[in-house]
Image 1 (cartoon, one colour):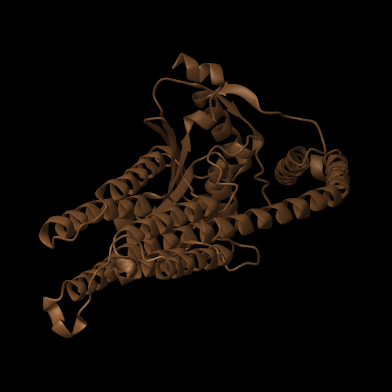
Image 2 (image 1 turned 45 degrees about the vertical axis):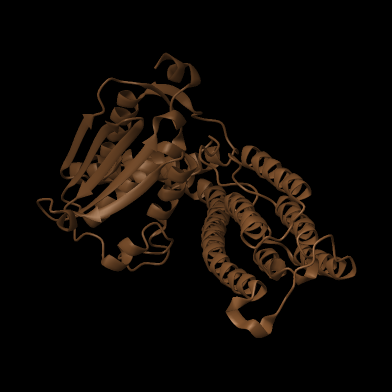
Length: 447
């Protein structure tokens, strides 16, 4: 089992705080709704004052409108670049809307104003956006505002004659309020629902990643324990093989001597893997993250991989361009080796590694001439235990490699050559790693 722990911190970590109910991506929908309310109030006040010849207190109503505009401008500037808006901010914004609506209704007819049903719009938005206690608080505030309008009629009296039908201004206002309420509810609640669904999907993705990382931690603990247990028998086998190589039956037969050398090489490889697991677990001292270059790192990795694997045909092409200083460690090396090992198992006759640069990314493409990935595996690429090898624990290699790439802020994708029109069969696995996660700080400054 290859260990794939890595010492550098996450370069693109997920948000540490998940937005709960009562938190949305931004206040923009409410801000836009408030601007619509401002324009609508201005148009309605002018129409009622000049068209219907109802004497409204224009100065107090203008002051309320000015306060609403100032609050909306402040909200726009404050929340323009914020990623998440919490429950308290949303609660305050809706309370301000309820208070200003109550003030305008008080100045323009009180409870007899047909636009009193705009309270329902505020309550509906609160029910969608806020936590339970906040939603009830907004509903209570709207109810208190309505009761206050009934108890204190205000300076203006609006005559209502519903029996006249659409000829009555009150009925016209009631119809307009109904259409406005329905339209705004559909438009904005649909938009807010889309934002909330996107938030829930993001939350589900983060939960999935957390479960996968917990799975990796458990496997790391198991690997560390297995490394302790394997250390003694591997050392014993090494001593026995050393003794056999000096015995006459083996020294006199070159074929047996060659097989012993191969066994010793594979045993040394097992010891190296076990040592690497213990080093990554912090239980031994050995190779620490070291300064190197992209070319030297890849050349050393390829040379070591070829020596320790039964490779028949291996094509290596370094098209990175101008060399760059990077920091390498065992986790990065094992991630690449793991992908190469998977390609070798699928295609013992041919494996290729191509390194290139795409802007600020290091791109490593591993290809083979095997049967390729099944469609079901491609659709669940990087998930644990997705393998065509039919053995217990299969499919962990790419799963671990993908999580190391995520730790570095990169990604791993895969496709079959036939799916993209490339010549030949087999599969291609592409590792994309941002150079900012591999280079030293002073090297980045020099660039």
